[in-house]
Image 1: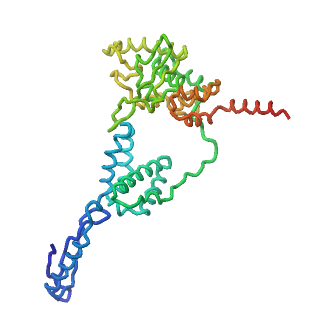
Image 2: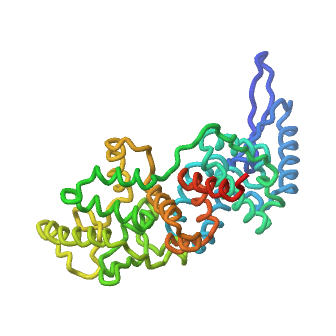
Image 3: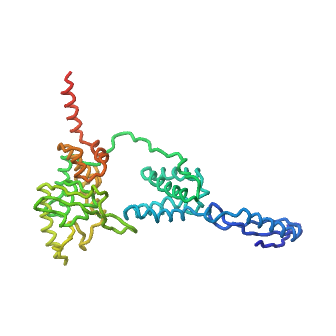
Length: 382
């Protein structure tokens, strides 16, 4: 309904204006008003207001076509959470909250242009050249959902130019250690004074288990008589940063790993010491399901703990920096150096796709490369 008022110009002339609500801004979803002025009579202002009201009513936009990107995301999200693990849900939720919704959340999805999508991915590429592609892919999923539900006719992200990270020159430091480097690393941990720390890194280096798989281990998972380690769960981060236990990454990740005798020896040492130490803290560690590596409250350690332990040890040893996942790569590299087949390494590491194993295989030690050249030279012999 229009609001009609009179006003005076600077020269004292009396005129009329009206203010009218004309609907929702198609881009932001906020209420829009228009002001028309300069009418000589109230009747003229009333007639123009009536005409405009009729025009708006005849060209009204269906409510479902006014839907915000954030609302479409919520609908997509409710379906998506039933298809992935909680740790993935938590990671994707943060991605939208921190990076995607700030760009598109308050916009009507039908109004979002190719140019706006291009700007978003260009900005993401500048601030996160490693993660930008994931943000783009998940944004595209929401637009695909909108197309499927007929909110829009096409997905604008399909028409943007994807930035490409230029190939970096120079040699990248490998995320693994060879046999001698690993041996040097362990000389900087005293197995009698820091038994738990030594044992944890020993398990990582000599079994190739993932960080979460290692921290989820219970003594029931270790068969000392058969010298095996069973992987059937993993520690990860769920919603709101809460650590949770869930099934391993893939079905192939559920596996039984043969242990070497020295690793079994250190595990036995730690189990004996753990029982004494935690009894002093008031915990009985003889119950079923006792964690192999626990915090001072006999709960799961933080996922960040192994990395915090590793950093000062690398500094002391003066070895090149690797991540906790680098122990897994080191184990794979050592297996290949020892003559294990790609299939054997795939089974031991629990890779569902042999491509993942082959990617690690490309990072074999220089010694292996030298042997390959020697074999080639001997074969050609001219």
